Image 1 (cartoon, rainbow, N blue to C red):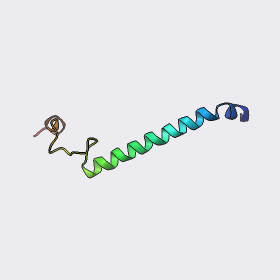
Image 2 (cartoon, helix red, strand yellow; image 1 turned 180 degrees about the vertical axis):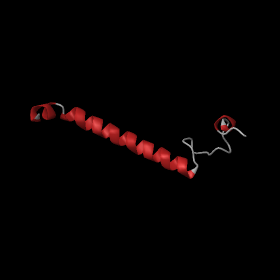
Image 3 (spheres, rainbow, N blue to C red; image 1 turned 90 degrees about the vertical axis):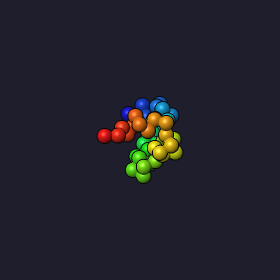
Image 4 (cartoon, helix red, strand yellow; image 1 turned 180 degrees about the horizontal axis):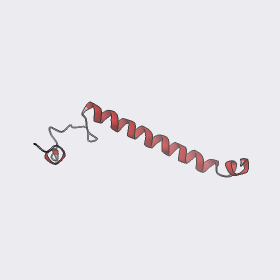
Length: 57
């Protein structure tokens, strides 16, 4: 087991780093969504696609 860990240490570190980055991105998107901002940062009022995201009842 120790030989396998040492042989794949670089791959394991890269995967752990990528998982961490993706987790931080998801957390930021969730926080922005709760605050009402979007990924583009301009909000829905000025968005050209606002009618398709939030159709009027």
